[in-house]
Length: 163
Image 1 (cartoon, rainbow, N blue to C red):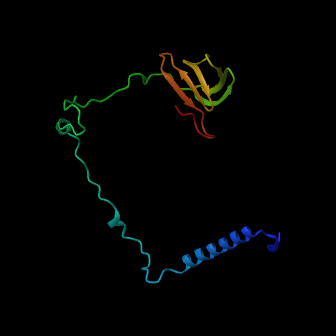
Image 2 (tube, one colour):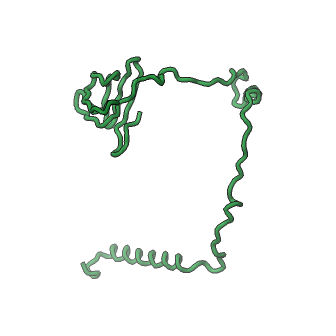
Image 3 (cartoon, one colour):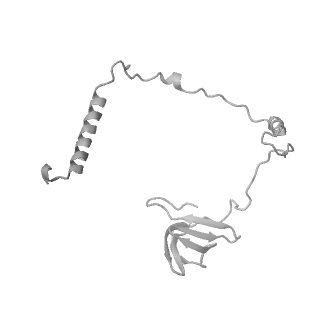
């Protein structure tokens, strides 16, 4: 379409684009007058220093908690370590979710079992010690023999499933 056939609004827009591009080229090529040349800062002077902290002494933690910095009670239980007993190290290995099919009234999944065999599992069926309870787009929810929920997601191509 020749320039003369363009509507006025398109001509104005094209001219504004050309002017903006020309201005960008001028600004990029010519530095501002009086501007100092850019120099890389000394890398060592810009790095923060790393200070090793002493191990948090339980007495210091208790003393800080006694001050009740967030309001509330100043009585604080001593720090403890939480160990999740719901999932033991000896639990059955998880199947790998290969794919899901969602349809009205249910669906099914294809899983790769720990012995590398593929298995089609419908809702309510078992795959090893896991029972399929729900299927979504790219997700499946299994329950193990102890009744713990085990969600799996289908992988992106070339990766394994993620719990």
